[in-house]
Amino acid sequence: MDADRYPSSPFGRARRTPGAHGYIAYFPAPIPRTIELPPSTQRLLADAEAWLGRLAGVGQSIANPYLLIRPYLLREALASTRIEGTRTTMAELFAAEAGDAPNADVEEVTNYVAALEWGLTELERLPLSVRLLRELHSRLMAGVRGRERMPGDLRTTQNWIGAANSTIETARFVPPPPGELAALLRDWELFANEEPETPLLVQNALLHAQFETIHPFLDGNGRLGRLLLVFFLIHRGRLPAPLLYLSAYLERHRRHYYDALDAIREKGDAIPWVEMFLTAVETQSRDAVARAQQIIEVRSRYLQATASMTTTNGLALVELICENPRMTTRQVEERMSVSRPTALRLLRQLADRGVLTEDDPGPRGQRRYVARELMDAVADEGTQSSG
Image (tube, rainbow, N blue to C red):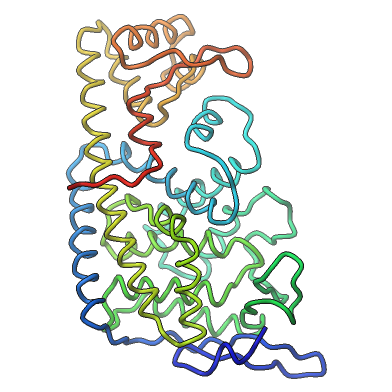
């Protein structure tokens, strides 16, 4: 690591650790409690705040917010894990939930969803804290690549960021030594729970940058740090539920994302990252609002299609389809507590009404159906516009 790239700034500096085997590492300063925002950043902040408020309003106005939460959770998990190198799709994730054998990439995505869902329940009784970070990390990293990643344990050895064959001397960036973590994380926890002069979204951006700089775990820091972006907004009452999937924007602009975080460490300049984060909030809030409207309209059409059915099970099946647009008879049997013939009849009735189409058979030959219109609304990879 080249110490000259990381001169002293309000955010920290690089220096050599003591001892005969000392090495260059970055030593972050406590998070600055105030930051001056130029007019261009203030305009971005106003736009991001407005669209975030509009998205929060959508979440509060619908009778069943889980209708939106589930697809948005999956989109966030997919995008965040893709930044780390996984290669799976929404369709593959739904297929695994429908009974296909999951691959390692799918398992990493489902771990992310499980960690996020667990953490949301814990936010009701716990503040954002190191304890919560460790519990989230334990669930995020459980069982995917083994114990070497120390799920839930703060690192006790030095890590570094660089090419696959890099050493601590040739690494591009070396986070603070393990002995620095306790004080740095105490400061991070304090900042996450206090009311500073800094606007809330700027506070969120600074928290993320500091977490990624500290890199407190051996692996999974990027995924956990991005998960915390939405957690913070829910924790501080800006969103009623995890309706914002920021990782999709960060994935599309991955190089800019890394460069903006590097600018804080290398130049002491947080504005590029703050502006990128605010742009991500606005862009993804717009997309989420537009996608919400589309999902709600599709669900409404599906419900209308069940009006002529003689059983109330049609309504229940539509709600189930909104959770997973790819359905098998076994899923319907288990989730709705009906017999196999009843499950098959219900699926065929919705197929006759244009809600479902029969899909390719599953791995054991079971019949599968897909709600293609809903799948398109949920799984579309492009960013939509609300106009």
